[in-house]
Amino acid sequence: MAAAIFASSAFAQASSVAGVWWAKAGAPRIAPIEGGEPPFTPAGLAAYRKNQAGLADKSVQDRTTRFCLPEGLPRSWGSAYPFEIIETPGQVTVVYEANHAFRLIDMTQPAPPMTDENREPWYNGHSYGRWEGDTLVVDAVDFNDRTFIDATGLPHSDRLRVTERIRRLSGGKQLEVVATVEDAEIFAKPWSARFVYESRPQIRLDTSYTCGEKHRDLSQAKGGGR
Amino acid sequence: MRRPGATGLGAALLCCALGSATMAAPAASAPATPDFSGLWSHGPVDAFKPVPGKPAATQYRDPNPDLANFFALKIEGDWRNPNLRPWAAAVVKRHSEAAAAGHGIPTPQETCFPSGVPNIATVPAAIQFLQTADKVTILYMRDHQVRQVHLNVPHSKTLTPTWYGESVGRYEGDTLVVDTIGLNDKTPVDFFGTPHTEDIHVVERYRLINDGRNLELTVTVTDPKTFIAPWSGVMTHNRVRGKMGEEACAENNREVSVGEHYPVPVQE
Image: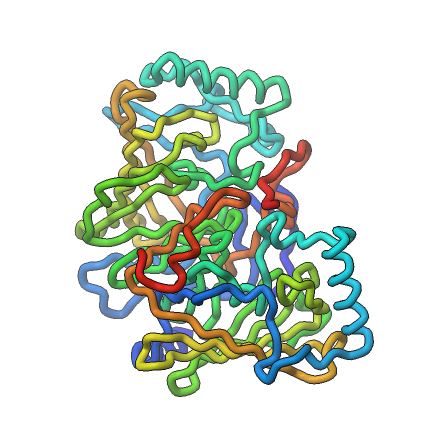
């Protein structure tokens, strides 16, 4: 265990995605990189249409937004607020300012096989990471089915698996996250969404975020302000 | 990724960190900076323990409180604490009498609002310190609350009061010293409902004791409008094994709160 921790730690010093990052705009809709809608199964498409209609006529509630629940993945990456990636021995932590949500990415072991016996479904799943060169690759598994994939009601089942490839771009001024979504109940094949964030070293996370209260001025997202 | 043994209140409060991960090994070479890695928690009935010779925090009315009362959230503080200003003593009395009557005034923990400082230190759930060069990030399992302590910088000149205010800090030998101001007055300082004003100034000193088996927190709270003199108290944390759990307070997914249910914050 100790060897694994120090090995990953030493490697993490060479490759790092640590820092405060902020998208120029939030992503209420999360779509495939190539555009269009995700490759739904018939059941998946029916579930999505039902959610869309329900959110429109308010027969379906977006509980994530209303009660500030953990947003799940990849929806967390669509946040309009900044987030910080913190690297410590054996762990990479993502702290999302929105709802002060955090994810602990275990860098000491690969994702264990998910069986009916060992499941503990979480909103944000359980995350296991490794470095591939300068890219942090995270496997997130064992989700509950209480979140949407995005704010438009894109559904997923509790068989969701999300693989994130996270790396710096533009000499470190930007961060790219490519999230690949697999869920055979909802999608006919895996699909990937891409997010790009700006490095904002002068920003301090405001961890006093409280559901329903006024929070940070989002016009600062485009740069300039603190 | 292991099924929790139990999700009842007792288990949630006593264990709080469930699963299979092991603790990170201590850093091999960290000459000046203490290594607080791993998970920490403390027992459910902890008030801030008095520091000999200094004014104390509010204590239990009953010096031997019944654990069952704690689980029933019947937590009665001693409003006769001589360090409380009259208005603050009246608030503690109101909380205590309501608890005794079986309808305790809910704490931030039951209503899913942020806990504030130093109240968050009284919450019996796992915490983790992420120590990096320019800051210490403290993760709290209870409703995934987070604080960041900015190291070796002064406080901002102007602050608008918030739930967590502004924390700056430094290492003094084996001790992490955290200085917090800019807090709003919406949180109590403890489980007994002891109030504070926006003038509150909290200094926390964290250090390892007992060969690293425990993490000792000593808080000193200054708020002349509430307390006659600054008071100090100690909260001793134990190392806990396992993986920090995921809590969604609004859905009470770990059954932290039992019995009465309160309205929680919502976003329209």
